[in-house]
Length: 429
Image (cartoon, rainbow, N blue to C red; front, top):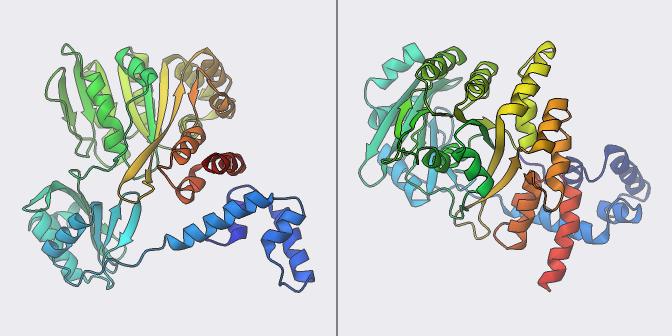
């Protein structure tokens, strides 16, 4: 459960260190424990009065965000699908020994009060995916099938075994996840249209991978003379005109994924889209494919462009780092980071992004290995190297499209955000 205490928010945000907070707590204890900790923080010069006001607003908003269960009495598959659709869900998880949960926007919500028994989950799996799926789970432990239901649409369902028994994750790709999607930045368009090199896409785990890749696939497929291969297990809409675009199954375990990628590279496509390069083997294959003169668009779970590149380089042993950094500096064209946040009115989601454009300054940083300097490049106003996620989140906050309680946890420079929101409030008056 999220910790909404003021001290926890201060520590998590890096606004006050442990020594400073301990000193203020000691002062509070010496004075009888009745004085508010926020008042002591201001008196000790660790926080401004305006900053304290904004943090208290954030604390109250976090508590208010806790939602009650969406009570559904009937746990049959028809009732669960209908309730999920009615609430605008993009995903639903039905699991033995747990309540049913749905993802609405960027948040998970509880849809039943009671936990489900094994037979209830088994019936759901059979009715959604077919009678033979439970038998397949006994051998493979993971089965993916398309589903289609009148009144609920269609999508994909993944059944798997977990500690308490069987579970199934259902996706609703027909539901638009981002109501405030913006056009691609010209630098990303130029990087993809160049037809070679590595374009890395990153984002929070479990949100918006298909949505992030879809516009880039359309760009890569714009040339009718090209052959484009998409390696993914998720349902991504493929362009019907332009280039020849085909999909290959990616697989689950690293060995299967490596074999899939090696097979695809041997087909010599003009562009290769890889749904996940989150393991050493898959990232190395993507890097070598880009080094061979192809366009490679690859996705990785990471919150920022710096974190994505740090994760990639950490795949390699120390003796191989000079080669990796040199190759990455040569083939990397851009890093696009995409986050989904709840819209301010809670009716949908808003997309925030970070863009790292690989110019000579970025190449030099990547070669040297001082990746922390990338954040400094992105924070410079008007930088030719792109823009930071913090800046984009602040712009969305200033436009009133998102709430500070949803922005705060994603911002790296939290003290910077609190200071800038003071200016926003002054402008609003």
